[in-house]
Image 1 (cartoon, rainbow, N blue to C red):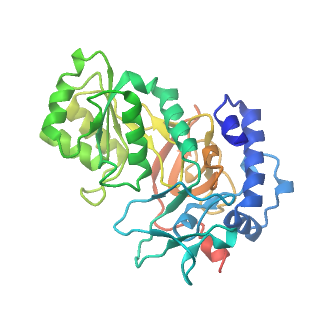
Image 2: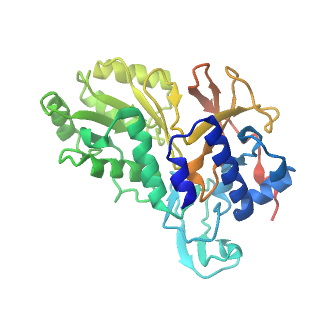
Length: 355
């Protein structure tokens, strides 16, 4: 696909703007939900000359509608965390979230839940595969140089998680017998980490916040040469911590100066990374903007706190322009910080588009 070839090449500011505008026009034409939203807020493609003018779809739409561009069948459906599930089948049934209106015979059946899960219908997994590898390697070097230890469920325990899919791909690409999932094997992991100094490979310890805390409490040890990366997520198992508190605890337990962070979402196919101080950087095909919380269609300058808007060009088969329910700010050096979440959605897209 043309977009896949373009987005993973080196993108200067002009290239990024041109590619982004092309993807916007493609999604406006091929993504019914996005087009209806843009129409509802009065945005026309012919008036858009820069990516900052593009409308950002409230991410909550992924909980209520099939957000896809085009008519291809999904190769994989990633689900956000939760206790409910979605069933994919063929045919059509009244009341189901259906792609039939787009000419696709796939149905995502609704479930009885007060907290619906986001559904990302990925029609080309090869795009995600390339994004998750090139994104990581752009910041950390070749994956094959690493032993990768994960404190998360494995793919059998949670086959619908985009995060676990990503980590499993890293583990396979590392080509290391030691790389793997160690959520239920703390003693084995502790032994392996103590041996890393003589392995000759770089080491990444990545985990959900609660899992890293559990391991750090049981096996405090000095890990000065190991990249320790948290992906967020207490999952109701621990009292929520702010990032600074979490990093301070992990740094103390592992006697290291820096804790890394990964920022991704079910609804995205790209990740941002913070290698120090919680200051995140994005790969070249991803960009963060900040919107005014009182005027969600307006953007704020550097240093001002507001709602996070993300451009993820790897999402060209779903929606590349998402308004998140996270608060943050952009720093003068181009990095961004995550500062919490809204208590409620500041821009309720479903109120603008009543079926």
